[in-house]
Structures are given as C-alpha cells and as structure tokens.
Amino acid sequence: MKLTVKDLSRIAGVSIKTLHHYHKIGLLIPNEISETGYRYYGLKEINRLQEILFYKELDIPLLDIKNLLGENSNRVITLEKQMILFEKKIWRYQQLIKTITRSIEYTKKGEKMDNTLMFKGFETEEEWKNALEQQNNYLKENYNTEINTTSINISEMNIMAIEAKNFTDRMAEFLRNGVKYNDSSVQHAVNQHLKFLNKNGHPISKEDYVNQTKFFLQDDFHRDMLEQQQIGLTYYLVAVAENLLIN
Amino acid sequence: MKLTVKDLSRIAGVSIKTLHHYHKIGLLIPNEISETGYRYYGLKEINRLQEILFYKELDIPLLDIKNLLGENSNRVITLEKQMILFEKKIWRYQQLIKTITRSIEYTKKGEKMDNTLMFKGFETEEEWKNALEQQNNYLKENYNTEINTTSINISEMNIMAIEAKNFTDRMAEFLRNGVKYNDSSVQHAVNQHLKFLNKNGHPISKEDYVNQTKFFLQDDFHRDMLEQQQIGLTYYLVAVAENLLIN
DNA sequence: TATGAGGTATTACCTAAGGTTAGAGTCAAG
DNA sequence: CTTGACTCTAACCTTAGGTAATACCTCATA
Image (cartoon, rainbow over all chains, first blue to last red; front, side, top):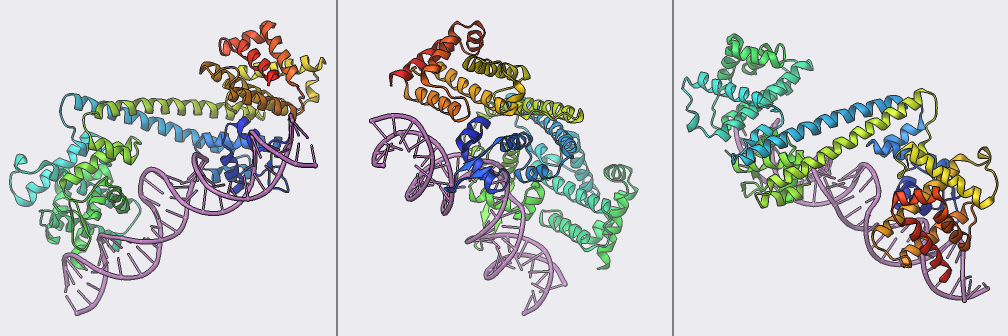
C-alpha cells in the first residue's frame, strides 16, 4: 500500500495542500519520500491521519494534536475536556438565539432596542437597570438634586453607568486577587475612574470620592449591591479611596 | 462627550488595537481626528460600536457588518439567517459530543476504536459493514476463492472500501447533475478508480469492470444497494463502463 | 523508447481579526 | 518645563490552509 498525496487526499477527504501542511509542521510525515521528493503514505500514516482528523473535528489546534499524539493515555481526559467545551458552546449559542429572538421582537414592534444591553458585563436587563439606578442615586447624593431623567441624555448616562460598572468589576478583581488597597495598579485604576468622571461632566474631587465610598458603607442599598458582587468590596473601596488622599 | 481610544475601549470592552482596526477598514470612523492624529469618539460612534459588537457576537464577519450597517431594514432577515446557522452549530456540537462519548466508551472498554469508521462517507457502522461486505463480494467474484479474512489486512480492506464508496458517491453525483455517461470528467473518474485498484493489489481490466457492472445489474443485492443510494445508478455505471471500451 | 497527459514539488503571497512590539510624537498635571 | 501617561504609525506574527506560477516527475500508450 503506497499511496500518493492524491490517493490519500481522496480517501481521507482532505486537500493535498493540507497534507503538505501537515508534513511541513511535522504532524504527518510520509512513510517514504522518493529521491524526486514525492511523498508516499502507508497504512500507519492513514491511521495517524484518522486520529488527526478526529481531533481536528473537535476544534483542537494542530500543534496540540501533535503533542497529544506524542504522549498517550490522556486521551480520555482530553476528550472529556473537549466535551465540556462543546456543552458551553451549545449553551452560548442557545443564549444567542434567545438574544436574536428578543431583538427581532423589538424590531418588529418598531421599537429600537436599547443596544446598551448588549455590552459585555450586562447580560441581563436587570443588571443594567441596577447599574443605572446606582448611577442615579450617585448623582442624587453628590449634587443633592433631583434627577430629571428626561433632561439627561439617556445614552450618555448609560455610558457613565458602564464605566462605573467596569471600574467596580476591576476593583472586585483586585480584591479577589489579594491586591493590596495601596498597590499602585489599584490606585491607578481609581485615578483613571475619577479622571473619566471629571472629563465627562461629573466633577468629583478625591475628597468627594472618599465621602462617597463612606456613604456606600452605611447605605444599605449600596452596600448590599457591592457586597453581593464581591464580599468585602465596600470596605476595600473605602480603604482604596482614603489612600488616595495620602499620596 | 469626547472619548479617547482608551475611554472607548474601556467602555465597550474592546482593545485599542481593535478600534484602530475598525478605523482602518472603515467600519468605525472617529467623530473627530485631531491635527496630531488623535482619534476622538462621540455618542454616535458608541452606538455604532454597540451594533457592531452585537453582530460580531453573532460571528458575522466585519466586512459583512459594514455592509449590513450601510443598508437598513434587512436586519430581521440577517438575524433569522444567523439563528438558523446557530441551530446548525448546536446540532453539530451535539453530534460531536456523541462521537466523543462513543470514543470514550471504546477506550474504556480497552478496545481500540477502528478509526476508519470516522472517515467521511460512513456515518454509521452499518453503512460501513455493507461497504466492507461489498468489497468482500467483489474479491470473491474476481478471484473465485473463499476469503480468508485474517490473511487480508483489514485496514487495507477498509481503505479499498472507502475508495469504492467515494467513487460511487462521485458517480451518483454525476448522474444527479445530468452529466452524460461519456462526459470526459466521468470517464476520467472511472479511469482513476481502476488505476487505484490496479495500483493496490486488485488488478482489474476495463473488460473486467464492464462485466462487473453488468453483474451488478442482475444481482439483487448489488442492484438494490446501488439503487438505494441513487435511482438509476446501476444502469448509469454500465453505460459508463461500456464507454470505456470505445475510447 | 519517446511522448503527452496528468501528478507533484517548491516558493511565495493571501486570508480575518486583531496581538505585539518599537520608536516617535502628544497631552495634561504638577 | 518636566514627567508620566497616552497615542500615533509601521511592521511583523498568528491559524490552517487556498491559490498561483513554474518546474519537474511518472506512467500508460504509440
């Protein structure tokens, strides 16, 4: 059994170029290479190609396949890992279908969907509303003014809410990773946050911010909100804010 | 509202390079570009980016998104198309999970899975067995000897069966597409098939092949087999084979 | 044994959606 | 005015091959 590239490509349903490629990266080396450079494959190579294609079907990168075929016995583990990955993908696609269905409904109703919902971080409408409400309260407390929602550009407010959410997420991650409140990267993050607020029509001094975090501490709504996201976050934020004044 | 690349990247959760890229391909052009080349984005751009990311989430290529955002109103159609695509993907992943499950079972049983089954064309074990049997019969008829299966390399037989299946598939497609029996591409295909057989230990002349197709015609098993795959295939093959002798 | 058709090899450039440098210029706060 | 953070462009890199150009090889047939 001495198969040419064409034979093998026909049998296995891959292109000749693919065989060249696999040869080049050392994934599938011909059984024999003639003096004139022709590749000839045998049964062993066919079996190996079978395995390669099997793994490839599972979306495993070729280099990983190469390593996989090198060792042995962890096949089952690899397969099980891959299965979990597929289940996640299925779940994701199911979610996307739901999103599309919703979007189509909105469009058909003639309403324009509030695309802000799509932004990462806000997977549910509820989460987004909470963020908005927080933003709302924040303004109320800092300026002691009733918010006239109609007078504020809704889109602009969404953006502020998104930035706030992103900032809080980052802080929560710092906390989870054990990054100290006075670590430069933490301080940098909060400085950026304040800079953003100042730049976008929400002037706030460092002192204001300290007061705000302290307010969060004693206000049930805000504290619950933050603690629900990450236990200890409220307290962490106070420490971070107070450290701002020291430098 | 005058956002820098960093601001926007933070808000939308994309990298700065992504914004550069979108600018370069004309997908998202900044609201303002300073004399020094700095990009500044406004609300309009944020909304556009939102839409872009929404479509991107749906695995739509950026250039397609660009066109999509250019026109309007076919949004619903696009979304519905995409939904069908997702359903297909879900189905595919479910199949993959089944394949993995099967493979794991084999491995756990200590048996080595006959990977030849994976090759395209044979979706079920039954189909594969049929093909093998056919191959078996073929040998019987051509050599008039009882087959000693152990003496013949099973893998090699698989490969011959696969090639045969591929060939038959191709012929069926020719027939379906109305390609005439004496078309050069049809003749070429059958020549290749015979060449392959001759090269791999199954010497067969053109006359032999004509006789074989005629045998298929009168043999219930083979005729049913072929006709089940594609009505008229048995008769087509005879015509194709007889034409071989003319040239 | 020569010829012609069809197979094969290598080289090089291309894809999508950015990531990752490097080097140089710019902005804003102190 | 300095400094640190930010931004710019340009160039090369990634996956898994596709495509094209050009040259060489094989094998069945005349």
